[in-house]
Image 1: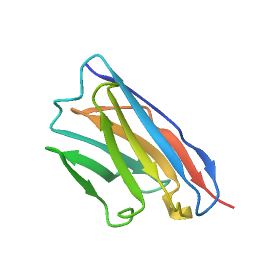
Image 2: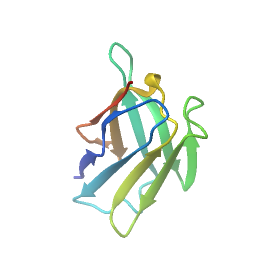
Image 3: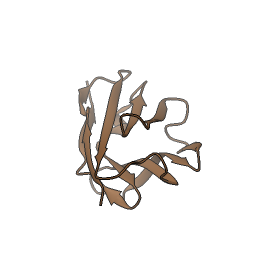
Image 4: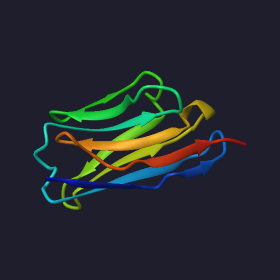
Length: 111
């Protein structure tokens, strides 16, 4: 079993940056085939934002060039660096590893 805890969300102005972190415990995520960040905005379905699949990073078209996903195997963490944030990035962000999910962290982009 894997426990995931996200942090780093908050309120930021358009154009600003945030760094989300997901700490995993219970198992090492270093060998996980797929790890990723997802988000869910009010009234919308959860969508994939950024993933590492077999070592290859993939991004949704809406965030490519602005967000960067990274994994630190030594710390057992999964991070998401978010730059040039837009109001439409407002959502609850979740990390997912090996089918497990964290509780989410709220990101609000507003002036």
